[in-house]
Image (cartoon, rainbow, N blue to C red; front, side, top):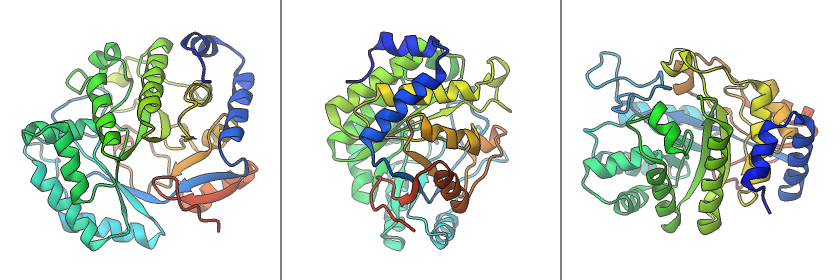
Length: 344
């Protein structure tokens, strides 16, 4: 049984970082293969940076009509996938801003063309806010939108757009973005249609501990009902070049590791917890393998969103395999749905 809200809050306020980490590591060893830590080779492709939401934590978006705004051509996307395949990749994470002129037909044509050219590539695409935008501009229900995208080749949905699933926080950092209930509805609907999704959290954006616990509670409740989340992926807010960054205190490695560990203990019904290297850095990512995580994510051949916010961390397959081995585990490549472990 996972933590209660009161226990989680008590841990957040505690100074016993090592004790919390040890408890989370033990839970991880009991839940996942104690010998292995997994990683993925995929590519983030941001098909457009035009967006109408103007989130205060984002340095990537451009308003409609901006000279440096773009929509990638299908040919450019094909080329990016070919480069990913040359590196041994198995999937792409395709997402972008919320564009009011792109209707369902655009996305169906894109997905079908990708499946036709790259039938074995896993298409992990379109965050909940994007799904909601597509549904609205196409005058469709969320269910019909997801069903049509699935028919066109959609394989799973990323958890992006969650930030903190508490409307008190969302109203302050992303007032135009979907509500917590709307984000939840997209994922519940996807799960009901047989589509797996991931769950995420961006923290360190001025929220309180109770907001993080509310986020955990919502995710655990969804998973209890649907079982549709493959993994939970927490990361720290990247503050540089953002409007919000001027107003909040920078998140520490200690806070990251504590939050990671508490997530493992609280989200007892989600199989995988990912330790991130992108914002905390590769060393903190490695330490996270002793704080409840069983996965280090992707090598991220391309990443544009937090790069725009000033994050310059980069890695490759050999480095991820090295930090896993040095932490005492066997590195294993996985696919987007945490299947097909490939020992090398």
